[in-house]
Amino acid sequence: MSKDTVTITDNATGRSIELPVLHGTAGPSAIDVRSLFKSLGYFTFDPGFMSTASCKSAITFIDGEQGILRYRGYPIEQLAEHSSYLEVCYLLLYGELPNTAEFDSFSSSIKRHALLHEAMRRFVSAFRHDAHPMAIMVGVVGALAAFYGDATNVHDPSVRELASHRLIAKMPTIAAWSYKHSIGEPFIYPNNSLGFAENFLHMMFSVPAEPFKPDPRIVKALDLILILHADHEQNASTSTVRLTGSSEASPFAAVSAGIGSLWGPSHGGANEAVIRMLEEIVESGKPVQHYIDRAKDKNDRYRLMGFGHRVYKNYDPRARIIRQACYEVLETLSDDHANKALFDTAMELERIALEDDYFKERKLYPNVDFYSGIILRAIGIPMNMFTVVFAMARVVGWLAHWNEMMSDPDARIARPRQLYVGKVERDYVGIDKRG
Image (cartoon, rainbow, N blue to C red; front, side):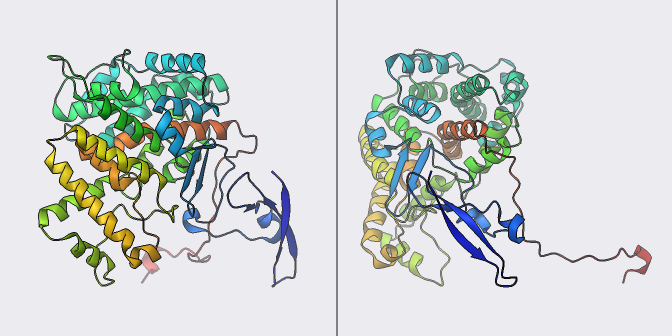
């Protein structure tokens, strides 16, 4: 990482400081401002961290202007076409794609850890029947720390590795059990003869009374969704995991905090909002152009969900991939007229928006959420489970970043500063003398 410098001058005092410019292997360079306060007495002010790099990372690269997403250097397009979710998990955790022996060992480890402690059955059952599945997931993942006290030794790489395997393995079981609890069906144990995505569908939709075998194309589509959501650089939930983990908290506590962050509708709930929007358009009977016009009307607060992205100012590369998967899933479910109507409406929305100068000038392109909800709904996953599936996919990204941070010699407990705008010092006045 080569260094240049920039000079910052305080016009009020005339003092100057040279700050290093850090150059990564790709993407924008960063000014190292760590000595700014000590030298000149200033903090930087950046609400939402729009222009602040909080860490060095070698895991995921995004170029929002070009529409590029890479895991450990591999384009998402290649991984989506050739890889599997578990292979992507290995890549994110260890930095390289596995050979056959490495992958077999990793897959076996994940399968061995998929079971939950039997006490967890009672814990999940104790939630209200109508508890949101994300609330259950936050609680259950946090509670895992009570079963695996050895995970608190976060500076031991072997401890971190075991905790990572446990979490990746148990997330589908936790997710499926939260769904089974909500509908009053018996919990289904994992089946080690099944692949990762198929095992999740087995635990979600099978019952003890009869066999269940999902269509392989459905399994492939779900595995694709997991790959596309496995990591996305320093988003809100990943930053939350890093922030929590920086205090050397248990990995289960850190991941539980990340799940809580993902739960917010501005982060993990976007695909649910897209489905509600498409349902409204279909049920209204009005032409799609009517809603396009509403979105362009500055006096109308209506927004088209699933367009635009905080990072991507080009077409979200994940949206291009998942769009084709929508076709294949709905072909599989040929009698699913309701979801086909949603998909047709989505395609028409996309067509009109991509030809409209209003959207092109503002770089409002469809993002991954625009299509992922249609696939999940077509599979039979209810909308309140959409974010749970997102968390199940993203856990490996959270763990990769947590592990990277814990092995970084420059890592410190996170402690952001502030620009104070409250009252200056004042004296206490007794209650009997206050007006």
